[in-house]
Image 1 (tube, one colour):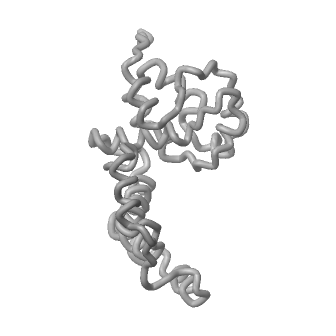
Image 2 (cartoon, rainbow, N blue to C red):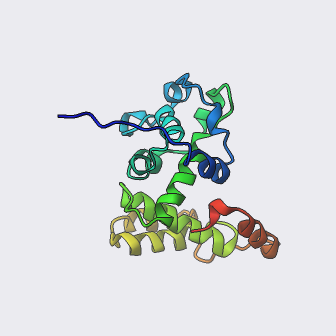
Image 3 (cartoon, rainbow, N blue to C red):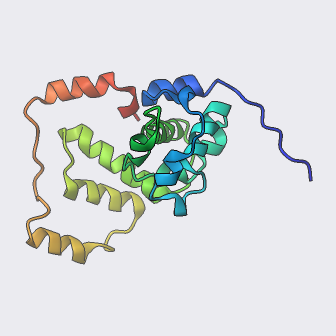
Length: 184
């Protein structure tokens, strides 16, 4: 069986660097990000590989990977990186590209949670957990799976029935409009 030839392309670096705000080309593959990542056991691509795939222009492989959806965004990678590269920000940019291009996420339930979270944040300026979880449950069809936990959280006043707003909603909306990574 013939091995697939990888032809490097710089066409992905510029848009991902712009969306993520990360200096993608500074990565020299020291693997410190991967060495510290607490989620590598479930990833199909390691954090250093994500950056390398961006450098090589392997967009299809990245956008179809589980890794961009499994990243916990704990930022261990940036704390370990000698060049200050935040791979969670790169993963967010890749998620956005996948959603924009209509690529079916490798983990649809994580993508549904991501979209419900962003929609809640955009509408109120902060996340309303109850509303976000209702939107998530409607998207995934898992309506009653977490009802006992939700009721317990509500009883202990960990879930608010009504959402809170923020003081300067217009300024927040202007910020969102200026940030390309927030758009769907």
